[in-house]
Length: 134
Image 1: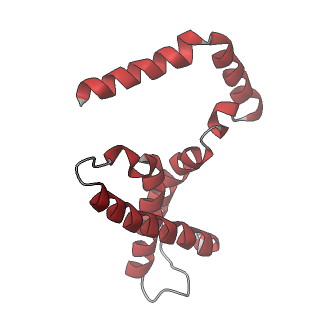
Image 2 (image 1 turned 180 degrees about the vertical axis):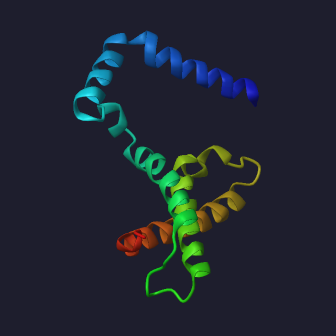
């Protein structure tokens, strides 16, 4: 497992910097000029998740109030945890790497539950978006 991760890490570095230096330079210039590059838009859901997760975690730690729809800070923290889980699920590539070839039916049931939980967290993020202030 470690060798596989090392291989893909080296492959990404080689592919990004050495195979096409013109593309790397173009993306660097775009990042310096407009603040983001085209590369960040290829997988925008993961880019947004990488940006939101640390901020949601910090917000949860620093929050001193909660929206009126909640009865307590504990409920609000549980809602934020669901949002965080959903964005982390995006970064896990929707658990596609954990496909169980020996028991595909079980994997499909687990994946259906994960997708429901993911959808719930994203809907909560949209619903309480205006409540993400302190």
